[in-house]
Image 1: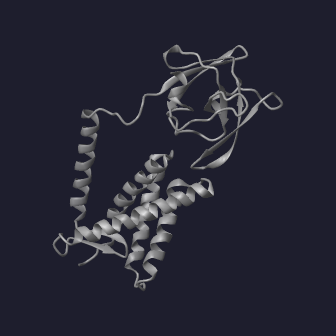
Image 2: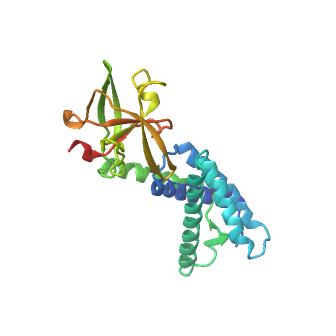
Image 3: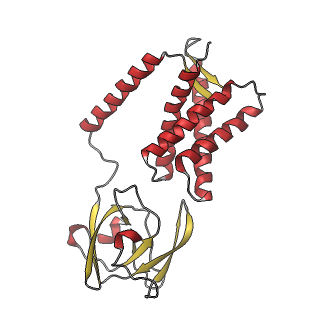
Length: 263
C-alpha cells in the first residue's frame, strides 16, 4: 500500500482528538477545545515517526514518547501526577485502539486500512476525508439538537452573604464533592477565590484549613463561614466556603457543591 503523508497526518489528527476527548472525560478534566486540537495536531505530526525504519522493539517506546508529547500539548501545565495520569490513559487508549484496528483488519479488504508504526492509516483521498468530516459534523450537530441532553445537570445559582455583602455564583452539582470542615463537620462549597473578591476574608482574618484530595493531587483549602448561603429552591444551608486558587472550569461555572447538601 502506498502511504501518503498528508492523509496519514490528517487521519491521526482525527483519531488523537477523539482519544484526547475520551481522556478528558475519563479524568473529568477542564481543557479548552483549542488545546485538544493542539494536542491532536501534535499527535498527527508525530505519527510520521511510524515511517522511520525502526526495529520492532522501538515501536512501543516511540508510541510512549508520542503519547507523552501529545498529552503535554493538550493538558499542560498541570501537576506532575495529573500529567502522568493523562499520559498513561492516552497511551493505554492508543494500545486498545491498535488492538481494535488489528481485529478489524481481518475483515477489511487489503489496501484500504493499515497500521503504520502504531498509527492508523485509511486509504482515502483528501476530498473524501473533507466531505466525510463535513457530513459527520453536520450529523452530530443535528443529533445534538434533536436528542435531549441528560448527561449534565443544569447549573445552580448560589447566593453567598458575608459582612453585609452578597455575591451570586453559578455552581455545578458534583456528587463527588464531599468536603467537610474537620472540626465542625459542616459541608464545604468550593468556589474560585477570584469570584469572591472583596467579599471573602483577606490575609490576617480568621480562616479554616480544609484538607482535600482529587485527581490533580491533595492539599489544603482556605475556608470561611459566611453569614448566609442560599441554594437551589431558596433553601438555606449552614456551611463553609472553600477558596480555590485554580479555575474550576473554562468559564461555565465558578463553584462546586454536593446536591445532597440542600436536600
